[in-house]
Length: 111
Length: 124
Image (cartoon, rainbow over all chains, first blue to last red; front, side):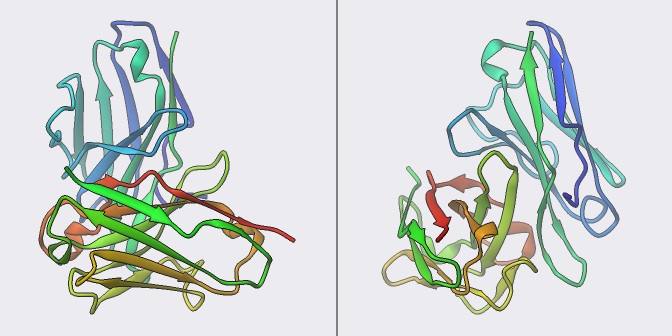
């Protein structure tokens, strides 16, 4: 069971907007940055969003991140077939066992 | 260009040991926190361990504490993970990952650049 909670799946048709939620607690999302990663089939993950809402160079502005309290979300607008992947959220956790914690991942399907 | 190349993976028996290496290039290795993240077959991402830029501070997931040891050689730009008392549930692809910014605080243990991973299979 993951420390951060994500829906296992999400879907949309090309051009639609899809939102993925990530729920945590005061020791992780509530007090630290949230990162989002995209993992295409058979490849290593890549960072999509860092520090809650920043995009690395090369990431399209169709991807956006936000955070409020102990929850965060990733939005994909103008969904494209190449967006079909698994998306993970992550945050540093300040609890007794300080560590990075991940969500369980959300598989996005483009219908 | 940041490059991270893991090596040392393979098949090991339960209770055995293995040492992973990650050769880093394309950035000033000694300025960045580094991490190991694993992914069991068909499963999600699982952060294993992180180490500060100097190597003086380390963090571990509870599941590997006391069995795994992270270290680094800043003179050779290499990150290591010594894995002892391996279990079947340690079977996974292990990724080496670099932190985002050249600062040693906990805001910079997030994986930012990832290697391609090396597969560890623990089985008799």
